[in-house]
Length: 347
Ligand code: NAD
Ligand code: ZN
Ligand code: ZN
Image (cartoon, rainbow, N blue to C red; front, top):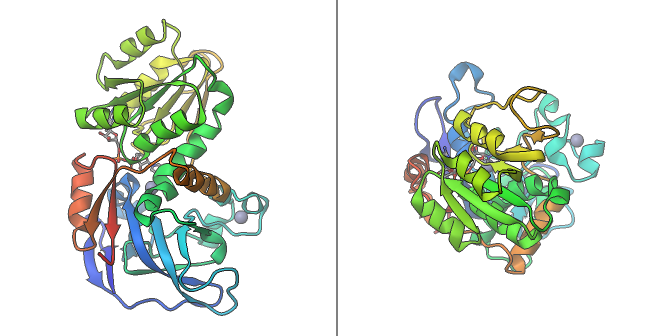
């Protein structure tokens, strides 16, 4: 089968021919119908050799949707032909966090060597993929696979980030969304579907700002040196109750710090390498909470898929064949993908 692999640190990803994997005991083999490309894949491919944490070659893709193709011994609860989305942040399945569905917070995954598909384990950018347990599969129940693939990360991650701030998202509050790409365009829709807040979206690219408006942002601003002053103005000098930063570089974190209100939340989702100083006298208003969340829970993935089924959120996608995946990554790197790039391994 064809797979998109990162084979050598510093080299671009390649489409290669590899054997179709066989499901071992407890595993499920999926025929992949759609797989999303995430900016985190570019971050991974930018890491230096001495810090690179995963075995190579690595089949990329941590946003996967597929049809159950074969079951390993002992697997129950799913059947061949079922259409499912893959919950990616795999945990040990036995601890308290995992029992609550928060496998993204499993403290045992790293020590046990359990790695998400596409982020250590073979991922979804292939014609077939292995899933380690049927508990990682969430039924699509009629949802379009191309729509669903981005929801497993680009939808789930902002949903998880927004949920922690829900008590602050009351009528009259303002939320700033910095970076309206794959995650950001879904964040705008999730905020509109779940809350009565005013959404202000920031990006460096005018087309992304147009997308932000078309999916529900009330205001859009170019992310430049004047952005924080304009945000202050828009909030009557008080600042925004919540800032969601989907970029996470020094410049956007400075905008976040300068535009959050007293008692507000700064949530840094982007892995741009910037840091935010927290501490009295450190530049943030009093009582601000800062968080760098990771992905989301299995239950939250169920919620996001249900929001899509009800037509409350929709992924804006551009589709590619598997051969086009390396070029699609180049486009993502250049900032030329509006919404999410989704690869269809079987055309
Ligand atoms: P993307 O490339 O689709 O979108 C990024 C957007 O940010 C683009 O629209 C780009 O124009 C915009 N941007 C770039 N520089 C900017 C600036 N200075 N100010 C404002 N906007 C700017 O990326 P994505 O796939 O949506 O991922 C967003 C970030 O979230 C990435 O850093 C990714 O690695 C990270 N991520 C984190 C998690 C997590 O669990 N924390 C999960 C998924 C992705
Ligand atoms: Zn991702
Ligand atoms: Zn666990």
